[in-house]
Amino acid sequence: MAHPLRYTFPGEEKSMQTAAKQVSIQNFVAQLRNFPEATFQHTEQIRGFLKDAPLNPDSLAPYLTWDRQHYTRNLIDKTPLYELLAICWEVGQASSVHNHRDQNCWMAVPIGRLLVENFHVVRQDIALGTCTIEIAETVEMNAAHPCAVDPLEPVHRVLNPREFSQRAVSLHVYSRPFDTCVVYSAEQGTCGEIQLHYTTEYGKPT
Image: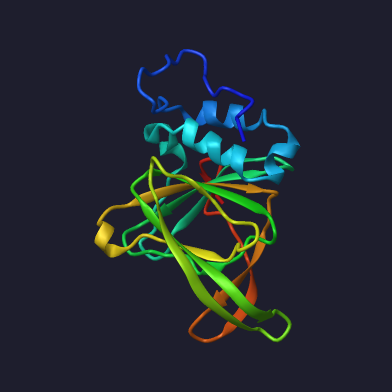
């Protein structure tokens, strides 16, 4: 699908190269807030936006916090339609296998690189806490390659493997916001609901 909007911002010159010039998080948020609700109901246009408007990593500094024990979830912007988070990953950190409560999700990686492992759910019974899942594919995300979670196969996990040998930051757009999700264990065949929390909100500790 062709993009109906051109993603250019005041004061930024068009690059002579095919890659778009990096934009600040402030301009990124301003553009994201201009998208109509229908845009968030499908994955292609927002994924195109993430690719066409790569972030200037330095502008993210006020929102980045690090924890050697666990990745951090840092809220940048939130409306009834979406929430925007920066997630900070130390080397070797990974999320649980999880879903997004039937909400769409887009991810970009302005700093470092990450792997996404996508899973196929063979069966699940949330009430009993049992499931069978199997890995379907693994893809790499980096500054040039954002991705969208497949609404038909939304169960996945994100990881920063030790062999990558560097910190990473991923930017997540969720539409609509949600505060619980289901986590899965392929090894134990279990699943269950957990509550989600922010490490910081708008640059301040919660």
